[in-house]
Length: 341
Image 1 (tube, rainbow, N blue to C red):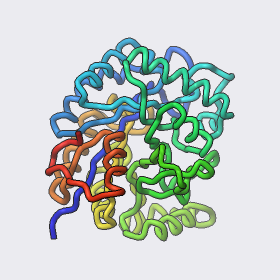
Image 2 (spheres, helix red, strand yellow; image 1 turned 30 degrees about the vertical axis):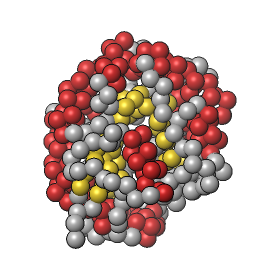
Image 3 (spheres, rainbow, N blue to C red; image 1 turned 90 degrees about the horizontal axis):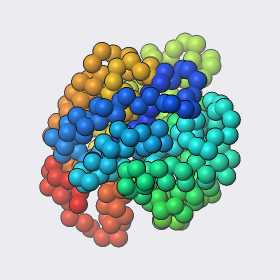
Image 4 (cartoon, one colour; image 1 turned 135 degrees about the vertical axis):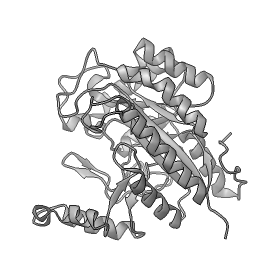
C-alpha cells in the first residue's frame, strides 16, 4: 500500500510580544520579534513550506513589520491573513478584561469596527486584502463567521480542538476541516462560503472523542487533585497533543501526526507564535535559543512526515481551495515535497 497524500499547513500568529500573565498591552506594543521573520521565512522556503502569517494590528501598523511582510507577499511565497487582538486593535472600548480578550465574548458591533480597522491597515501597509482569519486567543461563533464572510474571508482557523477554559470552549467541534454552521460555529452547516481549518490537535490514541472525554473528566475535581492527567501523560497511556513546536517536542508531534495519518486526515496543520522566535518574552517557551529549537523541531518533524506521506506544502487558503476542489471530484495530488499552485 502506497503512502497517503497529505497537505501541510504552517500558520504563525504574527503579533506583539509581552509577558502573557501581565495586563494586555494597548498602545506602543513591542514587536521586536518581527526582526526574526526574514530568517524564519528563508528557513521555511528551504524546506518547501509556504507559511501563512496571521497578522495583528500591532505588527501591521509597524513600519518594519509591514515592510517585511509585504516583501513575503510580493515573492508569492507566503500568505498574510488577519489576526484580531481586541486589546491593541482600535477602536478601543476601555480596558480589556480576560473574558474580553477572546473575540468570541465581544459585542458584535465592536468586532465589526475592530475587524474593519485591522483589514484597512493590512491592506494599506502590506498591500493585501486578507482571505483568512484567526481570532486572538481562539474561539469562534456563528455571527462572527457571517461577518468574516461579508468581508471576503473564505477560511477561518479560530476553533481550537478539544480546548476549554472559563471564558469559552471548542468542545465537540470537528478536529478536521469543515464548513461551520452560522448557528453554531462548532458544528458543520449547509453554507460553503467559509471553511474552518483547525490546527492539528488530538491524542496518541486513535479514538479522539473517547480520549477527550477521559481527559476532560480527569482534568476536573476530584481527579485533578490526584494529577491523573500528568500520570497518564508520563506513562504514555494518554497524551493530549497540539501540533506546535512551542508546546510539543518533536517526538510528541510525530506521535500525533502518525495517529492523524492512521485516521486518514487530509491536512496536517502546525502553528506557532512569532513572539516565540525570540527568547523569554511571553512565558510560553522559556528556553535559551528558542528560535533554533523551534526550527530544529519543525525540520525533524517534516523529515519524518515526508517519510510517512506524500506531502504538499500549502498556505491555508491554498489548502482550503484544494479541499474544496476535492469534494466533487478526484483530484491529482502534487508529487512529494512540492507546493500547491
